[in-house]
Image (cartoon, rainbow, N blue to C red; front, top):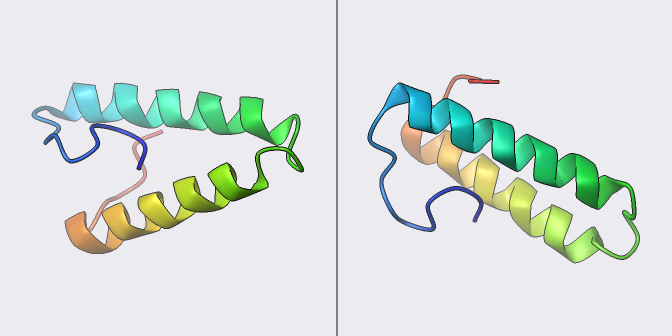
Length: 60
């Protein structure tokens, strides 16, 4: 669910910016992991799905 919400990322640079933003959001959420447990899980599932669908390589 992180970057784009179904909107295609059109460049490598925008993909990198999105990945960095998602990583920053996750770090913020992990500061209060118990409160954000469901959100972190959903983010991980979305990222895993992106990797499967797109064959992603780490951009961060």
